[in-house]
Amino acid sequence: MGTLKTALGIAATLVPEPFKGPAEALLKVVDVIEKVDSNKQEVEILKKRCDLLGSSIINVVKGKDTELLSKDLRDSIGRLVAGMSTTLEAANKDKATGFTAYVLAEDDVEVLEKANKSLDELLHCFWIENQIAGTIALADILTTVQDQAGHIERIPGAAYDSQEVVAKIMPCFEGTRSTLLANVGRWMSGATADGHSPPLYILDGIAGIGKSTVAITVAQRAADPNINCLGATFFFSRDQEDRKKSLGFVHTIAYQLARYHASYGKAIAAAITSNPEALDKVLHQQFNLLVAKPLYTLLEQRAAPLVLVFDALDECIEPDASTILSLLISSVSRLPNIKIFLTTRPERGLRSKYMDTPNANIFHLQEIEDLIVEQDICLYVNYCLSPPKIQEALGDSYDPCRQPTEEDKAKLAKLSGKLFIYASTAIKFILDEQHLNPKGQLASLLDLQSDSPSPLSQLGGLYLYVLNSAKPAENAENWLGPFKMIQGYWIREKVLSKPL
Image (cartoon, rainbow, N blue to C red; front, side, top):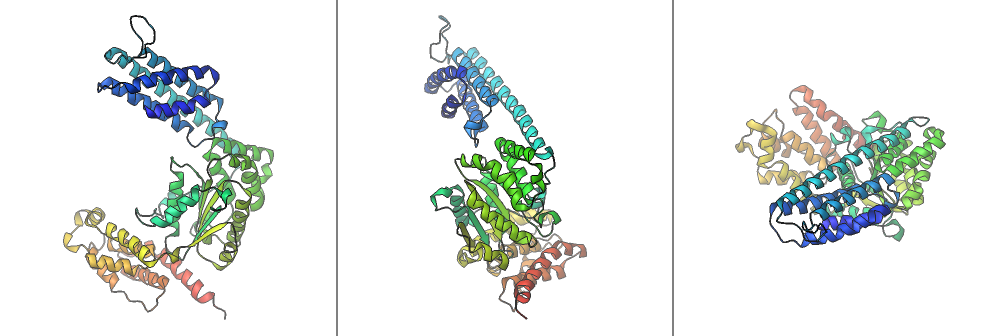
């Protein structure tokens, strides 16, 4: 019953005047039911129904500014409270006198069954009522945002939970990157005004070290319903034409923010209505007119910061990447209650910009202690190459005699250095259904020798070996793209960056 009492405390501040009396009366009845010590089935069901109704009230207002709740929603909560009050008072009435006795009729199964049925009907009506209202309101807002004197050219594949992103990026394996993620979590929830939690967090690192994995994990955690602070995401990709340039960047952010909260959607829609030319302005003006100005007051009213997550900025072409970085740096200093989490490789042009930024936490992923990274990769390798996971990958072809040894798994983790991508690529090769010999596949990888201490060179060597081993030939296409990416980055950093 504690959940319902919490919900009633919330409801008492929200519902219109006609429903405040029933809310107070309901609290008295709840106190009576809470004290009933009975293991009778109908009494237990009644208590569970009450808490379920309480959870429904809490969930419908969770993450929302209560001052901005619509009249329809307040009335709906009020009707639910009044209905519960009537139902539970009836279950506490003295049949002889007809007055509320504040003693639960726990021995009257018929009365309790009727009360439980009424509570079910109330809950059903409340859910349907708010689902329909919420769907209509959101549809109206999004229609306005998209159709008011123009069209928002959003990029659906850029969102952290899009099919394009999820197909290529996995979240951090459970138990890995724990210290880093805990630090990011504290940064996310910290107030920007106190000066101890800067609004910009930049995670940089070399190719394949796991930046995108961290980014998608941060986005997932911020989007958790218990936190609900993820406003928008954009995952850049050099392999996707619409995700490697700035065109559509602000439109996508504005669209996602409109979906985040109805009040944000209304503000953005109003901005487009009053200034439709904003959709076609240069990047800084777009952001100012579609996001910063419309949402400034709403952001000021937030109890917790709103988080934006942007991944792999270096995969955006120049000068677009530098323009976006300048936009983000200037925006976080002007907007209240905004936190931006950004990942990138330490490209010289970008690095020179963000290293001079006073309002940023900058963390170099490759500077995590070797021991911590090795432990994380060991955890990942041991899980992926455990007998159950190998059997899951190979099915009926699984042969326990071809199970990799603990010693070889430890060698693979060490060979991976700080590159999670090395370990994940190796595991894909080891569990190849064409070979069906995990032990032999791993042994062949451990025999690879590299004259270069560069982790990127070693990773390039791994891809080259996989390409040469690919059977049938079409399997090579699965590895060719990443191989070109790693080799291209290595050539750019090690060769083209040197003066002639």
